[in-house]
Length: 359
Image (cartoon, rainbow, N blue to C red; front, top):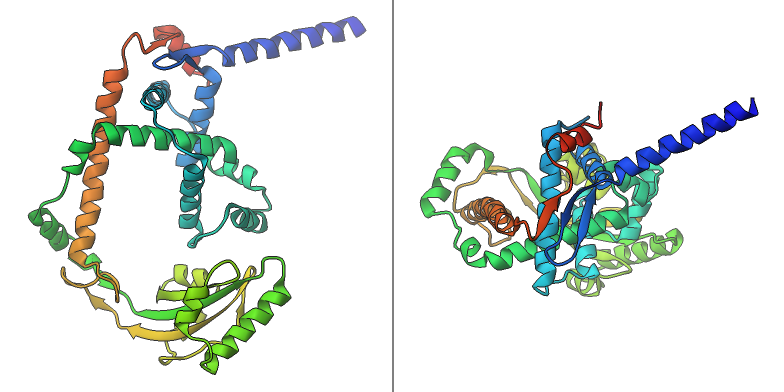
């Protein structure tokens, strides 16, 4: 019996060893600036990442080959950028990472604050949450972002002349407005002066500070300008434009019904102190704006300088530049895809067999 068990254990070990060797098989080598191998395991990880990001169950063999080619192109451009002396700092990567987080949360937060939010809402660590969302832990995701930023920087530098020339004409802008006129609507809006005092581990201290500021605003011993000037780590204060949307209610930490009630308040109304999970808040109603259709020369948002015309121009420019950037990437990677810069280690039927791992 012991011999049979030992034999089974040995066979199992060989099986795991064969699986590991298969996953470590090199699919391609990029050698423009240094030798970098793309293994089957690395491709599987990237495929899994894309599946999670796009909520897909699987990719075809042809799609996996496209992802492999994209990984080759990425390494080629990154190596070309490094060879040209370009670099992306960790600070830049962290800033970009936090910008992405801010879009999800609806406000600027630190990485530690986001980790706390994730823990409260999902009971997951930030690392596990990122793996669940994008298939990579925080450090791996930041390394991925760094390569993306470096590649983008290189392409923009190489094709700067062509990219800066891309711009919509006046006719393009006006046609876009005419086709999408019905979507340019300003909802009912209210301008608030919002003060937020984070608890930051000291709820009682935060409450005392918030109450003191609220009373000072009420008796006019504390001005809005003074609050803005001193706004920083201990509290944040400033103007905020709010529309009648569930998103804005969530941003304020109040229910949608409470938001609707807010719109009934008179000018200069001062709220009571509101407590959320992370902070204490109060606001002052400074201005109200009625809903209306926007003409092409109207301001996109009250008290700004950006007109609908400017907004359309910027968006069309971004779209055209994105298309031009894709074309530039294709042009550059095509020029870098030479036998001296990279080679496939697996080809034709053997490569297809390796990529068909879902069977």
